Length: 454
Ligand SMILES: Cc1cc2nc3c(=O)[nH]c(=O)nc-3n(C[C@H](O)[C@H](O)[C@H](O)COP(=O)(O)OP(=O)(O)OC[C@H]3O[C@@H](n4cnc5c(N)ncnc54)[C@H](O)[C@@H]3O)c2cc1C
Image (tube, rainbow, N blue to C red; front, top):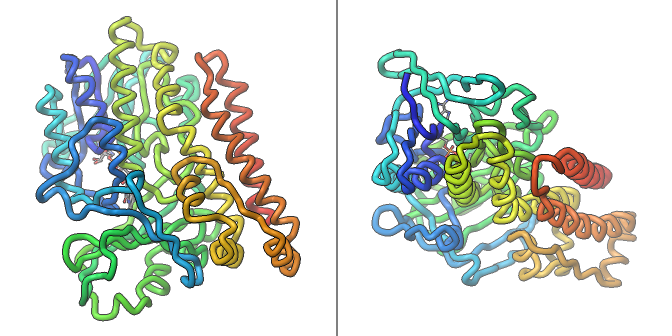
């Protein structure tokens, strides 16, 4: 039996930031991962991350081998690919990183700060005593040795697996399961093209429900002639396999002719609002395990790092007070909602809005600039979705017998604002949580009803 101040499960982007923040203050932190040390950071990923996350968190930009490419902006293709919105500028600068080396840097930062790494150790479940999470049980993957670790507070940063969250009893106050129709199953390939792409400094996003039902598709240049390309499909109803969609649609584009496959893989991305509550007695949930992902493009490295840093700060305060209760950890929820969660919840509605439009509606919206490049950028960064609905647009939708849909579009843009505000108004203590949760649920149900009625 080993004792720590804090146990962090998962040494991904979220877990490393949590461990470093806590270890920096001199506390005794254990970071535990099922991967071997040198494999930590290696993951099926689009490898793109916004510069603003580094600025906000005070983390050094990637350089040297860790940096594959610097990005200037995003090009968004309409479903019929006749229109491309090009958006660039400081707010959209970003990096394509070498995922393993970036992960190794974050791990080194946590270890250098004093965190103890348990590598190749599979965490099995939380230890719960008197309604508090007090530790974890694990198994050494090389040694088969059974392990029990105890801590004042435990962090679940195990990514989509959410190994602890899924095993929490209801009285802890964190929802154990999420609706899988809010999760995308994502297929990604690294390919070498015959020729370099024409605009390698832009992230290319393809909007097409036909290609990626309920999800998204991307194409990022990586290094010289390599590209990181993939698509995610929402696991809703009888959903198609993303690999089949990828080969049928994406790979039929002329630029892939003669290309060769370097790497391929599939994993999951919870593209939705964050969990309503991410704290319980003795436990905090971070990153993908807490659904801290941008619902529009599935980017989760930045949000998970924000979550990890906020969790770390809150845990330090709680330990200082000698109180590991849900109440003492509550301010983590508020910190995260204010730094990213409210934007994320608005974007969840924006996602439903885009899906509700369908490919035909979206083609029209982009062709006739019902939403401009600047407004699309603002909305996709979590701002208001301003629509520019003209008389001509009204006539077009009347012709399609979708006039009521246009009204719904306006309603959806207003709903986005209300949802974001609701998350900004996150309750100051656990006492106000239940009415807040019910209201959040009813707002999301309103958005889902709107989307289904299209
Ligand atoms: C195909 C794909 C493409 C993506 N593209 C992008 C992108 O371009 N940009 C972006 O920002 N985000 C992207 N994402 C999302 C991003 O990868 C995640 O949001 C981010 O990695 C979340 O970080 P995390 O720390 O929560 O989890 P992870 O990085 O997944 O880390 C979790 C860690 O927990 C460990 N672990 C899991 N279970 C256990 C267990 N039982 N015991 C011990 N350890 C365990 C894992 O080994 C892992 O190291 C993409 C996701 C997918 C699937």
